[in-house]
Length: 384
Ligand code: ADP
Ligand code: MG
Image (cartoon, rainbow, N blue to C red; front, side, top):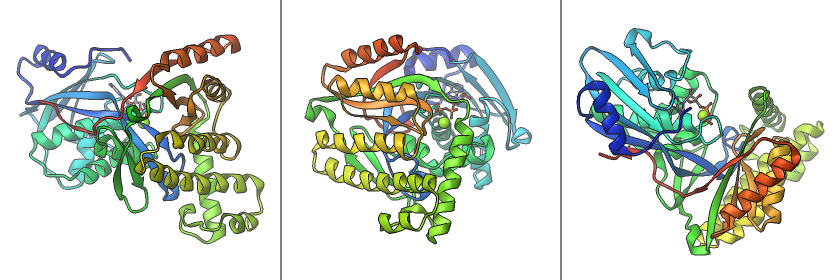
């Protein structure tokens, strides 16, 4: 994916150059990182993502021939589809766009065609959910163009349906909920069973901290099968324990005694302790004690490394070096087997910590990582 200038005025100009008309508006939806709560979503548990300043922008206007034309400035590609082409399993990046049209129509909304031109500065495939950003931006644009009155949570569910049932990726609701519901300066405490959402103040500047996101640029070839295996272990454990989901395990010790398999015991211990850590993290943030997140984030990483076994050497090295450089609570964020780490870093220290990690990667013979300072930002909406 190409890096492109990502502001609304530039995108509106690109839209005019391509279509010869003004866009009816410009909409945006952000990528996200998860602060804490990993692999808890499909166990009916708790997560706490926040939206990034990095986002997908979409300029759009109605079309009157019943087709949708979508251009991504990132991959320089234009795709056109009509209602008859909306078959689940569609190949290519445009499936994320067509899937949103499909999900809206399936839900009974009437949609006219549209010209869509988009650009994004959300890194793709890094676990920062560029796919949900794309879906939620398309949804915001199409909802407004067609005068559809759809509440935030319902938008997130429609976007998730596009990803699950049309693209075919079995993800939970966290990514689309974050891209839709987050507000600037907050993390989103989200209950994956009840869909209850609470904005929790996450003002790192008040604690003289900044948020480093470092992309290790690694991804494991077996990530899909490993993810499926973790889900299957959790489902099996819930079945043995006679609960609807691991969220319902209230007494960890007695649950562990009832599980014969040591691997499944470790998986359960991760999910149950991780849910508890999210709840503690919410309390810590509600009290404005941001630095006190550190032991929870540390324990989360150790649990992913030792119990859920979803980290890789590059990720563990990045976390160790960040810790040695004085970062608080460095941990892997996202589904695992590569991707990004997140760390709370004393203000002004982000570049130094990132440079130390990059140096350690050179020494270890790993490829160069990438990084940025994350700013908790707003969810999807209209910009102009
Ligand atoms: P992640 O969501 O973690 O970034 P995914 O594999 O779920 O990774 O989604 C990445 C895919 O989303 C890309 O391979 C591409 O198909 C699509 N995508 C995301 N952003 C864009 C974009 N700006 N232009 C075209 N396709 C995009
Ligand atoms: Mg994705």
